[in-house]
Amino acid sequence: MDIKSAKHPELNKQSSWSVLPFANNTETPMANDRAASMAAAILQADGETVVGSLPNGARTQELLGGDWKKRYEEALRSAHSTGANYALSGSVDEWNYRAGINAKPVVSMTLWIVDLHSNKIIWRGVASASGGEISQAGTSNLAQRIISRLIDRAIDR
Image (cartoon, rainbow, N blue to C red):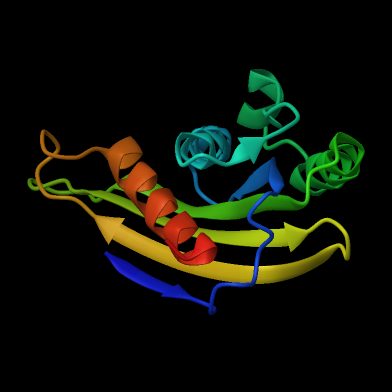
């Protein structure tokens, strides 16, 4: 796994989080919604308070490409109304299996944290990973590990 990130920001320990839509820069339908759902679950499993609803789009809209920027802006406005301190978002840049006899899953993502009081991005991180045989780790498993490691870096765990 290859990870690069900014130094973790000074975050309020008693903060609440909102998860914004993730951009899907892949050819895999709904990879972004899967990643956003995983991110919310990982934050909550790690003891963070996650408020609001997940910004998952309608399946048909997502299969046709959707309008990520519009969904992101709507979710950002909604996050302000929940009272959350921070919002987590990102982009899924690869979510696939490499072709060939030894098809390996590959996942690449960028995450960022928005301070909802200033509306500024205060942290960014990027990671990519590829798995061994398909039976050992699929794309979802790799995505979960990437998101967890990036969140750990962002929150300084």
